[in-house]
Figure 1 (cartoon, one colour):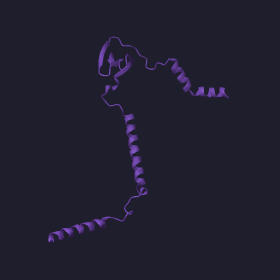
Figure 2 (cartoon, one colour):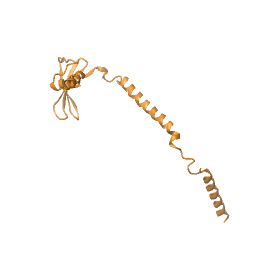
Figure 3 (cartoon, rainbow, N blue to C red):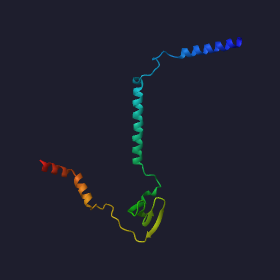
Figure 4 (cartoon, rainbow, N blue to C red):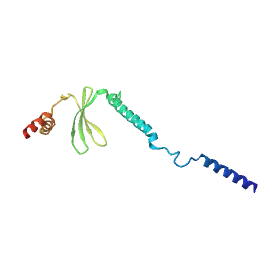
Length: 147
């Protein structure tokens, strides 16, 4: 019986301490206006970190030791749904490779390199019409014709 009384007293004491630590309803609840500034500052900080990381990747995006500009794709020809023939330039050598979804195979190593002009203007009708449609002077001419 004495043992039951001690357990009862411990339990009552524990409950009374727990009730004393509980604040009245509504007093301990944080209001959004109290921490809105912290949320806003945190959001701005996260956005700044994202923009800084994007800028660093754009500025220093090339990793040293990754071909260092010695490997270029000169041309590619699609020969199937997932198959292509690609002409690569490695240093001064040119290699013709076949590329599939599962493997890359050397087809031929060219003895004489193929000359490729870097800035060849597009000569297709579609590209001409697209450039005409995008040029701002055509917009001014059509607006004058409409009036």
